[in-house]
Image 1 (cartoon, rainbow, N blue to C red):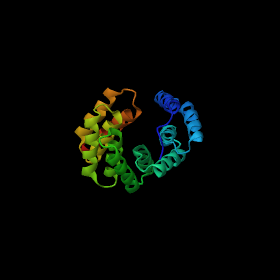
Image 2 (image 1 turned 90 degrees about the horizontal axis):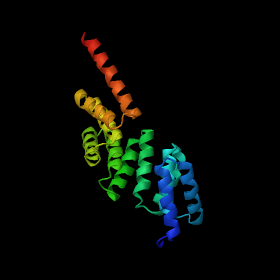
Image 3 (image 1 turned 135 degrees about the horizontal axis):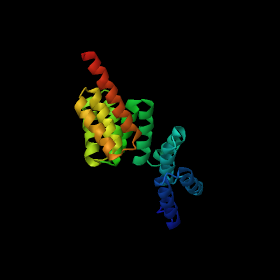
Length: 200
């Protein structure tokens, strides 16, 4: 059983968190790797390493840290979430759903977990449940451009063009710099032109 880490450990974890939020992932990882050398079973440090590696798109390193966190503490919702995210990225929908459902059970009503779970469910063929889960994520975080785009893509695949367009437009309003929102709007324009051509 682990006791509460010393105050210095918590301070360093907090410092690493701040660096991560500033996008300084290599600097955050330096702090976290030292913490892990001092205590190889430091689950918060493993979770943060996995999160930073994920941001750097180092998927195998992120998976290794997340798997270690879950092995030490099965209640690591961050570990389960990251494993689910990676499986989703690979298109391994069933494994993704399994991990994301575990994360959601441990940490209910987290909009990011629900977003990824909704996306995985939709692509696994559970379309209605996927849309409902994405809608729940959006209700919890109204202005997340990623959720707006994911939900828009889902509605587009369900051939609800007007709903998809509204969601993409809103994503661009929320974040005019969002590459994903811009790509989605471009895709809609192309699709609309194709449909107009076939109608003509």
